[in-house]
Length: 166
Image (cartoon, rainbow, N blue to C red; front, side, top):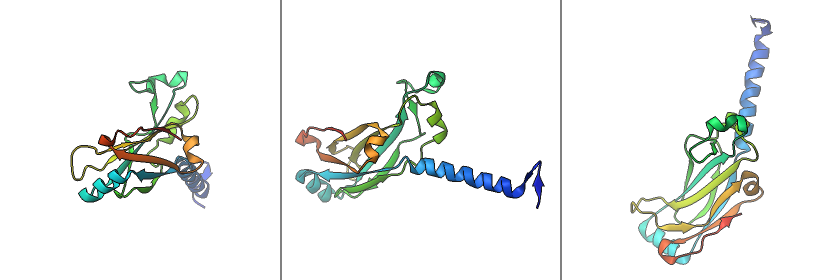
């Protein structure tokens, strides 16, 4: 067996595989599902315009005292470089947020739970303006992982009361 330093090559390979598995597990543990429902008017408008829906998710948390230097302009730790975006049909339905973009190394900087913010907009295929006003999520990730959360959307002009979920 070939050796690198004092460790056999097989041990090094196993360590690398274990590290990859731990990273993949941590990222898969960040996923959750939502269901998007639409008012009748929103469904009709999106269908007429052949418009889609985009779900935006961002992960964040409060910093430990020794990690405050990593906080963003509003004092929170962002856990990814860019929001995760999932496009679904304009009819609404299921969206899976994977959490694949979360930088799991940043989890050590958090004092308290990982949090998630989810917003929904029209995909802006037919217009540069968003057409939808939707419920949203902003709170502990563990709260949205228990079961799929349903977020309802209406057209902006419908003046639908949006709700913080779950």
